[in-house]
Length: 270
Image (cartoon, rainbow, N blue to C red; front, side, top):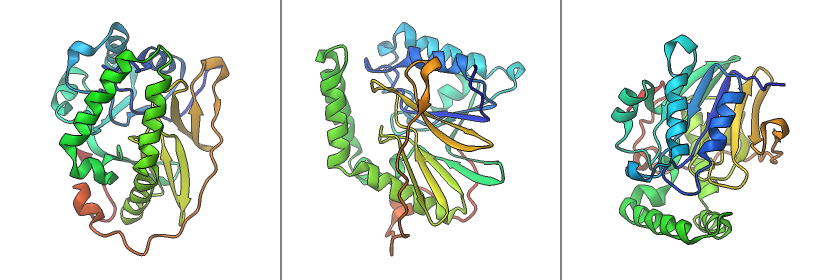
């Protein structure tokens, strides 16, 4: 039976990377019925289009097809740190809207989609160093085995070392509270996560460069964090929700993130 939802969210495909599961993402898009698609950042690995394979171009062609007004689907691209510099190109080439932050209402709840690198102090303060790290990681991927076990393990270890999952979750929940949002969605960390605090729900979509890619669907029953194995065997990923008190202080959160600290956020175009 074909899966159906109001909103489908996926992030961190890293087109141009050898680890990208672009072909599987295309299969997902052709199998799930949805009204709104949100590409939540880092769809590209870098600005070098020469790295794109046939599968990567097939994914972009599918996005272009879905954005055709006759299909009556809303396609939203939220800019990630790897997508910087591609906003105008994507808007014209793909015929879709590109945002720094996308806000929408559904089922009586206010939702925010933002990539999440804004809450990563290491990327914010060490942009050049982080780009060098990405280059080294991509070279390692070329020498890794087909399963990419070494580089995937390295990715998870670096995320834990930087406490990236914690930092992005805490920053996102604080940011959502300031914007009167009920739910906030991020990518960036590559780790699928669900958390709640003071009535606000945070979800991280995970990525499409792991052996088991993850994505999010939203419908009238709620938000579902799912694993992609095979469409006929797609199942929920059961992640324990954590409830935490609001931090006593969040110094310079919005300033270092380059985001306006205004209540009742609206969508912010690139």
